[in-house]
Image (cartoon, rainbow, N blue to C red; front, side):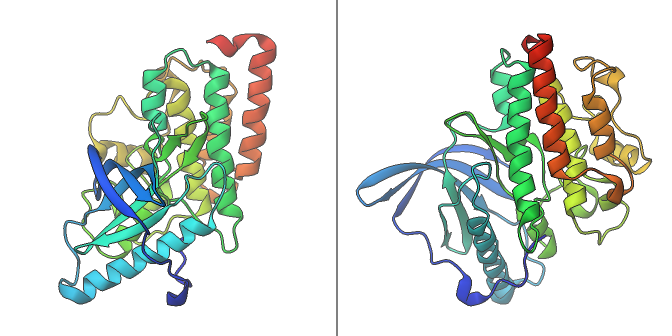
Length: 307
């Protein structure tokens, strides 16, 4: 969960060095991403720069912008404290003309979605290992005191590092934008919990629902499916509105729409438990990690790792 208890004296100082954007990468509901270089200490460091670009601030004027900037700074404190090999490192932030910029290491391999698309040679074991990485990062967030909820688990927010390790990125940012009343262009009901198809059923049943560790688990079920099949959970449904209605009705992804993963595959059982409509009955991340590791062993032993 976002941590309102962060004190102002804990807020990190602005980024040191000269930040130079180089190449536009993409645009999301609330941000623009560019590849850039951070020059400091005589060294050029390749970085990813996320420009947070809210389309409006609820209260308007200076007070609302100051509130926005303070909350962004608090999020950077949480990001800094959540150090883990499966969480994308945080380098720092800058605010330029009222626009916050979050800076992290540049990942040449892109995100999980792109990496899978560009590497069709990946085996099932390769994909499961990346899922284990992401699961360990999420388990770490949930184990912090107080727990930190990611709130936006999807392939786009899992980066692939230089050593081909999955690392979570962007936790807390989408929820923050909603908390501040910022219009982001997100299409999900309530504006939280990830894109259509990944967000938990309980987050769409009430406008004021807050993401929890168990809603992250629900989303992780969708991440498993997308990673193993290369398709989003409800890829066959054309509009987000219909996907939301489908999830609210308690309908979960079915094997017949994901022929890449046979109905008898044990991962369907794990995903089904992640999608349990009752959050308390969903598995914890440690249990998910154990089962993913067991699946790696099973596939390696049975010779199915090459599919």
